[in-house]
Length: 431
Image (cartoon, rainbow, N blue to C red; front, side, top):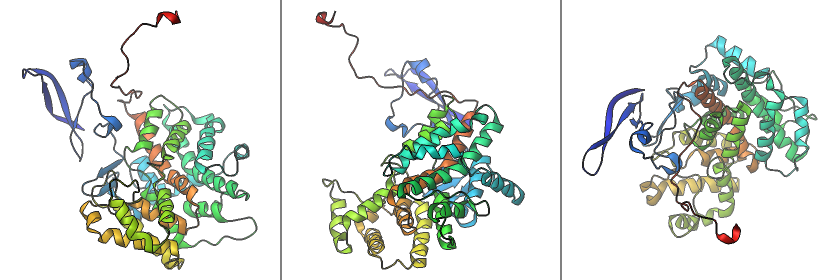
């Protein structure tokens, strides 16, 4: 990041009142540094949702929404998803570089050795109702990890931060699978150190002590791709929440829990769950034209879920990859004629051919296809966001670690535009 020019603010008499540095990143728009604005002018900026404000510097992820580009540490998401495993991507996000064969082996071994959770942690599940939402359970159980792994909570120690990162990457899949098993009344399945990261998770999700579980490589690859595509997405709501919680010096488990809670929101991590609920509402292929027209009506509250994206004004690059995976999974499981999936694919066709959606660039996004894939894998709808959290954990950890090491890091303290009552006296009858 370099300062290459300044922006001068003037008053109504064209007199200069403030000079603000303009900072330049590697790529992307230049940024006005407003840190000295209040000191020099007595003014704050007003930016609801911080959509025009850079809250930090970062070297992790870059998005160009106009061009439909997503980079992890400079690598195109398309290439990473085609050529790398999820743990290779985890190493890249956490350490800045793709691993060598030797470092990957060490990294995988470290993850594998920490997939078990403390046995007393299983008691937490008994305190939840069987029908509790998995995200509610995750907020409680992940938040409790600091009570069991408090031997490495010195956030100023790089060694402790690295160990906490490994533990979180390793244990969150175990906790996600336990949430599912608890909800359906089946015994927890312990991790198997002979399996890969994704194979291990699928076994913990779907195996039982009664039978052997046979892995399907097409399904394993599909879930691996989902995790890679959801691993990070710049300064989104949950990542910003993790950074804000971390800025206070909170332990990493508390910070990741804050991210999980934020992800739980329907406007953030619940999008692929909303896709399945929308398909159920549409009900049948014959109803699609009616719902398409409803989606075009500004006065109708109905919206097509899984189409368009707040950041991507072009095609979501993750959607292209997820679309191919979706078709692979449906073909592998011979589900092309299943009513739910026929409905989804026909809805896709309608939207891609409709002039209204084409003009507004409302293309299917990653949530549309990932929801279909997760449903095909046999994962219940209420588990979708938990799977999202499993993939995003590495992104949260990478940003948390980067923030702690940043010499410019300060505790988050946004300002406000106050429009309440000015100072006033308490009425006499209350004295």
